[in-house]
Image (cartoon, rainbow, N blue to C red; front, top):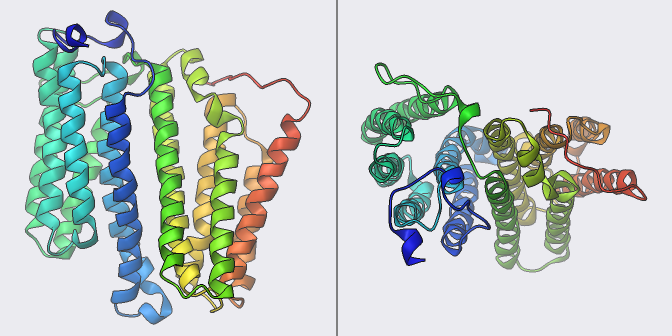
Length: 406
């Protein structure tokens, strides 16, 4: 451990490649269980405190701002996961990067509920420090290695976007949202195009060296973090209610939904993502694609968790349209992400994914006139049908091998 912690950083092929996620990385993930619960709480608070909440439009008003915060959290987690998948995570510099990200993410999580009012500066400073410090530490640790130029470009981009984050935190809500959105667009766009900086050039993502199995495992672990958050939200919501039959049914259906989401994810693409990354001609390309896919699925899980809380609190009431978007739209968005995930691993998509999304969309109108718990029941039935279709296709056949189209 001591000898590995010392010395200059090297990309994974030139040093012992990372194996399973370290305890520090798993500890880092635990912070995101908390942070994601704050995302759900913030969306729910928007619903209950904004004007027009009796019609459910608080969810629509706050959804964009909540998504903005979720994208910032994802940027921190993804940047840290890619770093530990490109360099030996037992190096001291890498451990410092993870610890800074851990503390920064915890502060961001604390600030999320009031990020567009009293704690905006707290959120912005924690985010900027986390994002700027990572490439700076890596640039120093890499020494004269060619990858150092990439880290310098990343530091420049995050420093420029950091100005937007800090200035935005001093403005009223509309200006804050505008500048923070511009900052995220700059960062996500720069990552997409190889972190281009005038005078310093850009890089080609397909040539990046990563430990594919390690990165795949990290995505799987984050999915479990997001799925665990749905369980926590359902449990907290039910424990706050008087344990009457309607609340009990809503809670039971919420747990069943989480089980179905887990089953669909792991069958079978979720089990062999690492194999697909290793088989790909350009592992970094499938790694980046899987990042986008998992982001879509995580957003779907977050919306589903918000739906749990809404229905557990009001199980027998007719639900307005924005609430139904959370209850059915969350699973539908997850299925869309899961369809793309299947394509990334196998190069094809099962028809059951698209059929299920269409059924959820078609069921939305009649469900507006039924108790909220009925919408949750429909979601469970549709997801269960997808899980059964997956099991029938795999029954009696040899395990399907990964065939990534990358």
